[in-house]
Length: 634
Image (cartoon, rainbow, N blue to C red; front, side, top):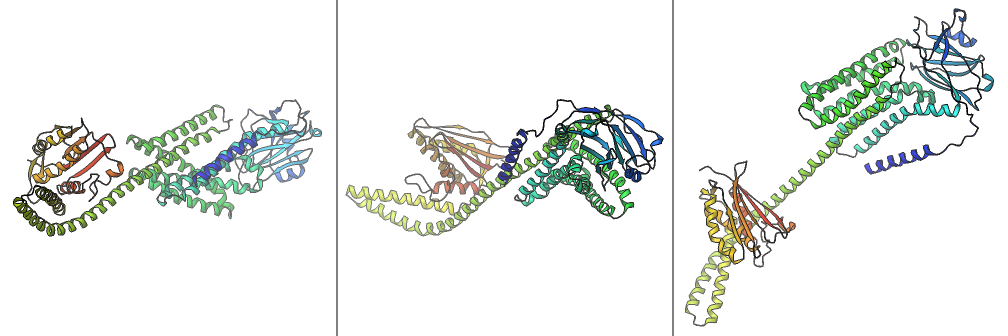
């Protein structure tokens, strides 16, 4: 599913690039005249906008027009006045298709008249006061006065940007460049949130709560950016009511979703503040939505709705930001990697926002805030990075648990095998050993009375094979009953020195040597003969794996967990990985006459001593055996 969405997004971006790169052929000739900026106009307040609209002229024109320019601030609106007229003279021009581009026009309803003809009208049943107007004019309308009737319920009314007169196509490009950015950013956020949501529903359910909250955060931000875009209100004017209140829905979702995500990443927070504020925001969001629905049915509620929700949203943003900063600083001091990532993304967003607000006031509030929209990408990117880190960490933890489970299953299967074999070995060994001893005794008597050398050699071979069978039975019994009845305190160095004396001749016959480095005062509790049997089995295997010039290194030490470590390392032929996993299994051996019982007995003896044996080997390099046994005090 992830691959599908990835390919879809790449294809979408590629097609968008191709479409936007295609040359557009003009269906008419463009003039060479530069765009004209109308920087001065006149305004007059209107007490009766309905009659004025019918007459296409101010009702109190005698009271006098006031002159304004694009460098002036919006005029202070008199009390109980909700309308005004704005007029300017349309300059002469030689454009092929002249158009007016009016930007930063603050009013809820706008009507434009030329020669008392209504050429443009926009009425809204919702309190959105931004207007971006692209209006075609004709050559006959040059040098005529353009009257604009403005209506609003807010405290601001007027124009504070130059009016541009130019070629319609060029102005339309300027309009698209300026206004389409919000649509692209908001649409990208919404599309990404849906793509993430569709991907997340196929993931483990334990991830869904945190992941879906991130999807809601991104979705809410995208909705808020789209709802504030004048482009949508101009192109989809019939749906303006729904588009406007999308901002309220987005603002009701964004804060609780963000804190729900934070709660999943950092837990309840100091003093449970993250959880408490998240619960408060959920309740506040529900009340806000109910308040919004009620405002559609009551004008009194609608009047108080804007003021109340503006204050509540401002409180949520301000207090939420302080709480986020407090928690992030606290977690960063604890060297929390996730907190450091979020702090970086949030810090970039905050720095861009603060600098842009400062520049807004430096420019006398005559500046469009837009860079914060790019800064928010850094914040969302940090959230996505944390999400990816959590998924990777959970995946690695799952792999680790799977490996541990595999080890436990192998140990369980091995224990079950050992139990079955030990029971079988105990019953068989007792029944077979006595007849073997009787047979060996009679063979010795017959050998002593025989005068035929050939018969004597046959009997000697039979006795040797009976002895080998007896050794195998002994291994069976040791495996079946590995319990060490009489345990004493054993000096590991002393036991290994005795074993060294026994096995050095065997190593020399193989062309190898044994090097010993033993730490003093290492003690374990066990049976001396059993421990020697286990160690001899391992060292003999190392000797048999040596070539000429081979070396076996034996050294001991105490680890941090107070365990005695016996390390036996050789540079022999090594063991394949698949064979390494089967070491200690009954009847598994790579030797010609091996039974696999030697290592099986070794494992059982060390296990009874509460220790463990680990093999590490590389084919052609050698093998290392690490024996770990709990230490004992002298």
